[in-house]
Image (cartoon, rainbow, N blue to C red):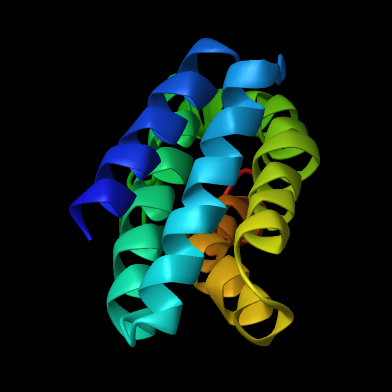
Length: 153
């Protein structure tokens, strides 16, 4: 299990250094992760393997959102913001959404496909990306509701 954690941390640091760059180091890390995951799963540690993998990969997605300037706010927090601030957040939202969908979520799906068998790929990918996707896509809905509630909108 320790080797899975070390390989995931290696993959995380490689991904942070070479966003979009790929390369031999990333390919080696993916091969290592697949080999470790296969070993853990065949030894009866599938649940542990998936739990660790999903926890660390969720953190990678959340950290990437943070580096892109996306701030997670709930509806109540957004309702308290001035309209000008909400407009600025919406202007940031489009580029963040583009990167999230085309790079982060797509890359995460590819990584899951490479590391795990088809029986766990879908559920792993969904569990890793769902919370971040919901946080991302709730923003325009909440902003629209905020605008409806403004007396001068």
